[in-house]
Image 1 (cartoon, rainbow, N blue to C red):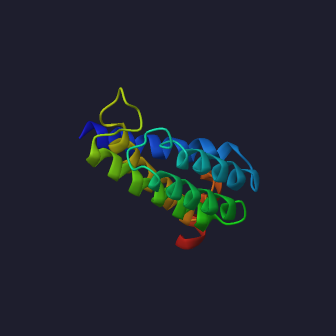
Image 2 (image 1 turned 120 degrees about the horizontal axis):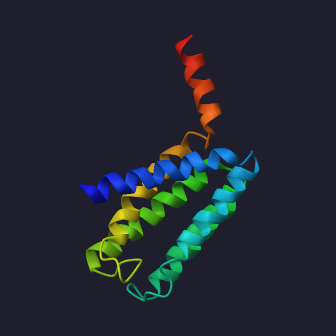
Length: 134
């Protein structure tokens, strides 16, 4: 239970900290972040050449994410898929932390959901909520 709560909180903290980055730099920063996440497993060798294909797919989505929040969200979900696969294989993203890939698989969809909503800052999200209520 602790792993779930902490992973969700990390995802929420990531999105909240991004509130301090103005658009369009926020979107571009997140495209770079997900590109890095996509390369995180390259040295594991757990899935051989498939790791390269995965990194290429995430890199493509990250590149398209420079102009589209939806592509960044897709890239985070792709990374979630690889997190689950690595967790099930017993080859975590951090070799010294057995549940690190599981935590990442829980955290990444939180970030993806935020991306699919357009990556709003806290102020922007509050303004949207207020306008919906009115």
